[in-house]
Length: 171
Image (cartoon, rainbow, N blue to C red; front, top):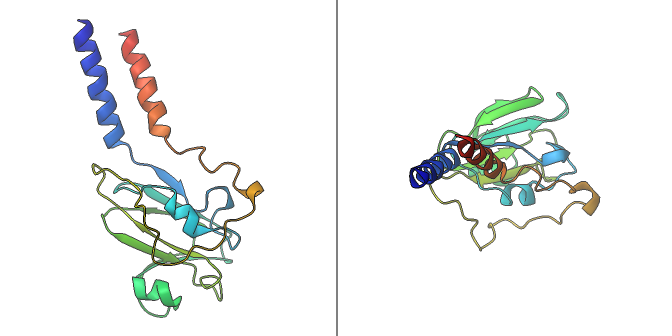
């Protein structure tokens, strides 16, 4: 009976790890604002199909454009726009394995650093950060005091698995 219980626990933990999608607040506690380093932010997470990006900002002061690569590089939102978001609390589900490019189209914001791109992988693939840097240089990081909670929610699925394990031990 003990071996079957252990096998069942392992099976459930594997299933939970693969089935759980994550919600990422863009810029973490700095949110979608001009003071954040979105190049660094986007590199510290592994994005999978089913994850959600949440852009929080003051409506009317910023916006979010999903764009093609050429528009991302030029910061010219007059062409190559795939989607526009302006609510101040935009939630974008990453529903395809592909590269996504995002910019703020307010004057000077994109060129000032309010842009990033991510490479979304299939949910069941191993998401390991590449060792080579992205082709665009990354601006210097924000001051140390603004990044105190960088990894607070990273790995939360581990805790879900741990709780499931504890529940199964009670059976």
